[in-house]
Length: 119
Ligand SMILES: [Zn+2]
Image (cartoon, rainbow, N blue to C red; front, side, top):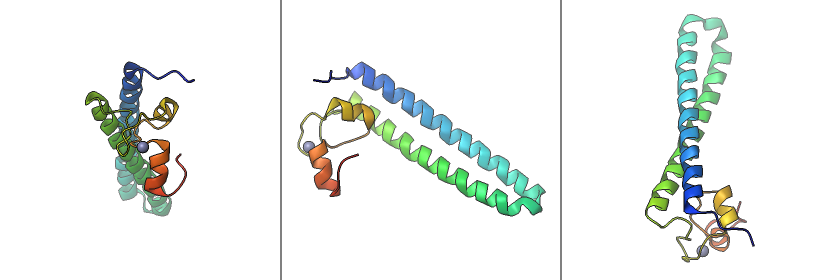
């Protein structure tokens, strides 16, 4: 039997993730600002700069999405609802919780909800 992660460990993990995604989003946004400045100065590199901008926008967006999930999981942990399936109320497999802390469903319900195997 895998040992159940203690709430404190999960909390630390989530706080670390929130910090990491916040930093990642900030870095991507800084890169976007820099690329925009370059864009104005150097028209010859405009195409490659645009490609780089698109990439950084995607990175910033993904980081913000992950940040929102980690923040939501942290709130649910504070409310004492973390680790319980929102659908059936069963305790979610601790290993799954550590792998996907923002998850809201147990493996079985996730499959029902999404119609495909859980990650
Ligand atoms: Zn469930």
